[in-house]
Length: 433
Image (cartoon, rainbow, N blue to C red; front, side, top):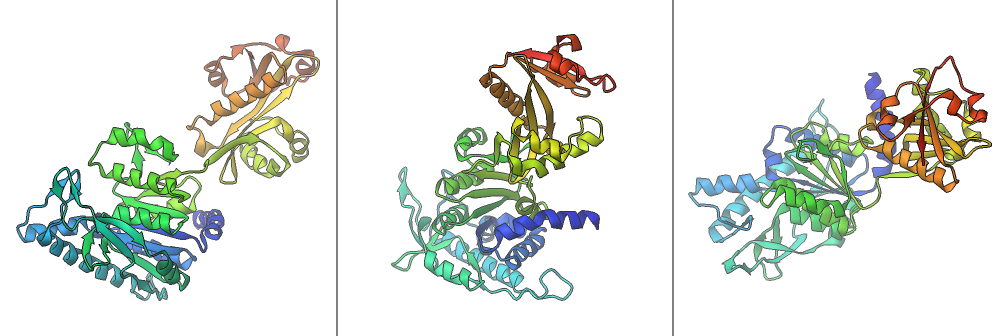
């Protein structure tokens, strides 16, 4: 119960921030087939109930493949894009129509004692995507394979204003009445851009983008994406998702998220917690390193108080922090101070002391300590200081690895040596700037 209450309290800022925002969510056909699909629907309903304007785009690739196999039709691709001839188009229409009905049925449920009880959702779609033929490439005619020409922005916004969930399929229509098969990633990306959506959420099989060691990459800027696309190579679905996320951000969408349709609650974890659970691609800086001001005192206390209680840091009262706030540099992440350090010039000397270096335990493997150390050294040089001292009881090796040499009380300037606490018995290190 306590964990639930804490989660809800920490989620409340996000609930307020997401209300009346437009989210485009893309769920591939594999995600619709997965056993976790029912939970994903419940999460989408929760978003809608919290005031999110929701556009859901679904895919249909495995369902199309199953219908082609049943009819004995061999699928044809060129450059990882399906060639949609007339027999294939019939399978596409069959698969997309069946899927759309199944999704609408799930969103229409109102079962007692279920997350859907009392939801009373309205779902709408229609000819909201105008398409054009992909044409002939490398001498290959793609027939009824198309690309997005236009999204009916006004029509979709009118439905969203009426608190309707908009459902878009991977089909588009031409002004001449033709039907085109479109990649659901393209539909979602164009919809997010044309609607000026606040978020594009892309579901995939993996937790998010993984590095070469299989570790989750939590945050990226669009300009950092190309090397990962090259690493993943063509034909990789994670590369397709990552490329779509970057395109959306370059087109004006503030944030794109890649989450897993396999993991129960991945969407909620990504949208309602600070650390998230997937990969975020965002234009704006997700974290900022800056000098502290008086409004940061409360956040600093929350960060350093647990370390003070463990005896790792020297205790500082609120009054002391308020008086010395200009000495601090901080790392802020979405309003939360996750790391700090302070520079105290030592009177009657050309030396300074690095003090109160602290990083939130949840963020200790992202190089933030190194960023703060570099900032403190920059500030010290700007003030004309030649030597930087640090006194520590627990992290001697960390400072040694970063160029600090063992020192002693005798090496401290007299103004600082007179304040040395022999009971704490801190180890002293110094570094020439």
